[in-house]
Length: 298
Image (cartoon, rainbow, N blue to C red; front, side):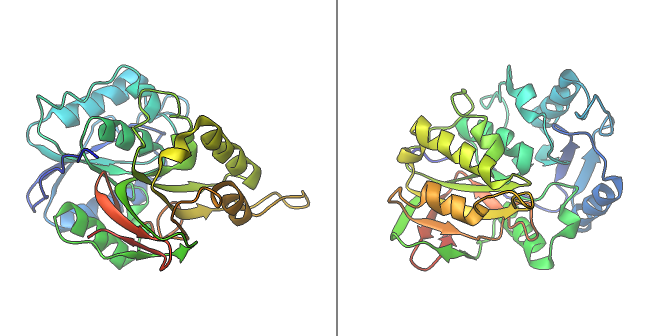
């Protein structure tokens, strides 16, 4: 499998740009606190002037959000891009987007949830990125999770993550983490990466079990799951069924829709919309041990 370009490790003093490519910003206090965390590490953090724009549920019109991403990506002095929040909107700015990887040096792109679309698009362009807390959630992370994010972007080794192994042995492949809902809406689009040999890491939030079932059934019908080497499952936070309505639990749905694939699977890993949301590299080789329940980054 083709390796991805890993951006150079960040160092104190590096310039980071803050953009809002998705939903409208509401958590101003959390944003300020998270920016201070990055600055306390010695980084220069510049916030895009129109970060608080609103256009319906979006953080400004598509052209404005595209300009933010382009300005950060094309800035030769910028070493990393910090996304403000998820929500919805990043796929809208990818319709005619080109990463222009030949004219810019690779830089870190950090976020999760709706930012999945940007992470996966960058993956298809051959560049690794980071599935990690956005700037409206970083402040809520425990110290070890925050340190893990800095370890990742500053070039230090990552400790393994422990979950619940479903059995099925050990797999090694390229890690591709993301939000299940966003990823499902990338099926049959040019943004969907080549999944051959991938270890797919999925999480979600506030989706009823029947909706998780529907999405995973779409993955099954598409044939995409048959290409994978393994699956790593994070938190499925607040994905309970409505009260007084017959339902499976989300855990039962995951077992039913994924348990017969014949590949290693580990669930209950500490990443996703729940706390903690452990940083995961996008596009690096990892080992998934479904007998021991371990995701190893060495």
